[in-house]
Image (cartoon, rainbow, N blue to C red; front, side, top):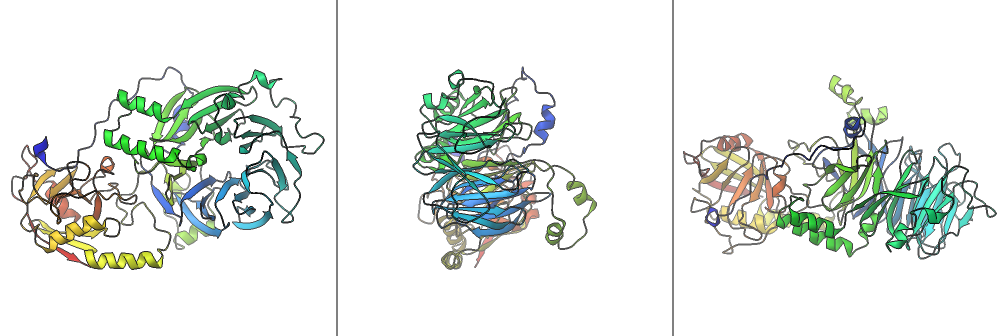
Length: 612
């Protein structure tokens, strides 16, 4: 009620599971066990600028990321998670395409700076580069796995041509051949290795099939015998995008070559039977569909959360960032994964059902570009020993190394991080948190942080009748909230106040001079706005947050969570973490309370000390 004052909401109830599926996929559980399943991302890692592309190299088990400032980073998939390997400032402009060959041995990047660069994945070295007279955009490797020389197909910005180049040789070679099938700029290319066929699509939505070999001027467009089962293109659904007047954002083929998937600008995911050219599945992920689901109550998002997601989606649609969205098949070809407004959807293509949604509760990120690792990573022994500081493996570590560790790796809209989802939830006991700060702050950022911490304070000790609770404050991320807290503390505002609301398995709340949850004000009088930060979440216990009665209603009350509370993200400002005295918080949490969640015996703040 309105008399309850500011407070965090309890966890939403979860409804019973969906009805039993009518169609079945044999051994479905086995396939799903080899896909990521965690609700929250386990780790995130930094670039200096927005991360736009990510790939996982087949068979060689590397994760490679690229940011809009032209930087490329190599990461090795380890027994659990990833390990940084090497960093290149590869290009002087935005990277348009980042593609790995089907054998996982080669990597190619194209950029606004009219350069194409080739890397040897195993040695993570740059092997060659091309200097072009045009701006290269989409690219795809189109050679067989055992080919001695790599071949890359490259589209041009503003033009309809696709040129085929070798990955080895001189820096400015003439292309093997130029493909002239399209009449509009090509925006998606994929190679179906099983049938030796390249699929390309242009901005008008026109899809074309053409052979990867032989490639010569006299016979560039004759497909291998048996590659397709249709005689005329008009007998297929390959004009579906053109009819819908949309263009592809991505094009990917299944491992067995039987299907290919297109995620298009109209936010529909289309799955085609390759040989027949027929559309076999279509999934509409456009905003009106989500608005309708939310109106019916089936989306299960509260009004504020859905409104924030909708606003971010509108911003995304107004930018070019959505063009990096993609869909990926799992290794079995039975499942398709792609990013949406509510997280990463995993679709069972055989039953035509959503198997799971990954990252649904991560409402601060709109995930875009996606890559999938499956299987047991092949870890270099020297790298593993270096990582373990030459310590011998324990029995538990040896057992882990023999267990598959599936991983989704994805970028997010306007984020200078990439995110990893595994079968594990984040380690809430990790003092460093799940967001890894692997980039050094700039000199300007260091000076600003020093100024902020000196004025506001970096740490606090809440001295209570149960003991002391030590906390780290995030003044750099939430300057106004920390200023409010530290000034109140230095003025003695919190001295003698009660812990007026204590809920076991949730949180302890205080900061109200009236002692009933209805009082308190900010140092400026009245209320002040929220300060949400992408790296500060309710993703672990012992998180310090502001209590409120809705958006922009912060006063003086605050609470300390005792469990992860992801449903509170972007609703309550996180401005600190408990670093010592967790046992004191737990003692307060376990105190007997009345029906209004007030402790029977008064628990008070004696004083709050602030240090810089």
